[in-house]
Image: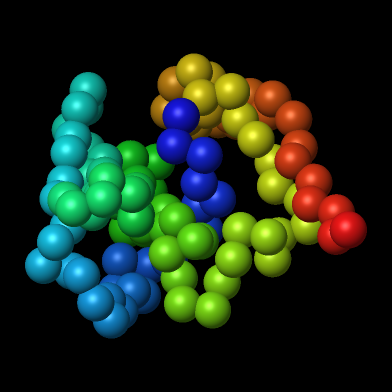
Length: 102
């Protein structure tokens, strides 16, 4: 479980402002998706999606000016049945995380 809020971007829609040379990648199972992470600290930064190889899923916390607390509600999927290719179309939702300001 990586615990990141992933937002979508087209393959050409990302600009790296720092650290691109420190990224490492891993692949598994079908080898379609490419999961990128910082080779120094290990944080998940983004991945090229298996469900749509023309898109990235991007860790919102890695975007300049964006905080995970900017999202009032975030749908959470169970991780086992989360991929559309594995579930026949729709991922299995486990619940919703809500951020309430104090």
